[in-house]
Length: 143
Image 1 (cartoon, rainbow, N blue to C red):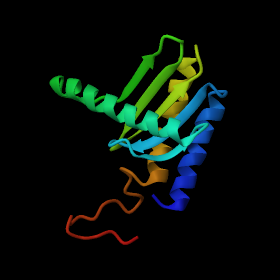
Image 2: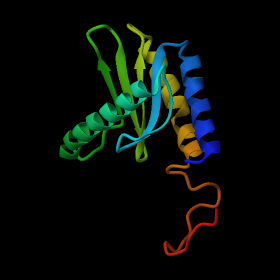
Image 3: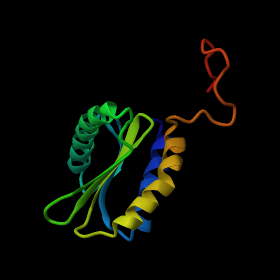
């Protein structure tokens, strides 16, 4: 991901934190293999740990989804201390976040859904742009 895309994704992650009234303590955008691409966290280790553990959880849950002929879209795990881990799968990547104890989950889910498509467009994942994909898959798009 280029510097412009990285800054755009970080800006969108910041909007999620702001619009949830700082109920999100760590938020990360990562590839499905757990490699973080952009994050907002007190330290990098927290973001990396959240990305890797979220990727592992999505992989396990996708195996269950395969039994039902579907994939996992969103996961919400409540921890004993009242904090939540929310993972939203989006086209080969995901947004994972951790919350403060006893957050307003409705607000968090609404805001996360609001920005999912914008994050994909900013990151350039799963988005072909206004030109669309070339008709011949052998053609390369000009960047």
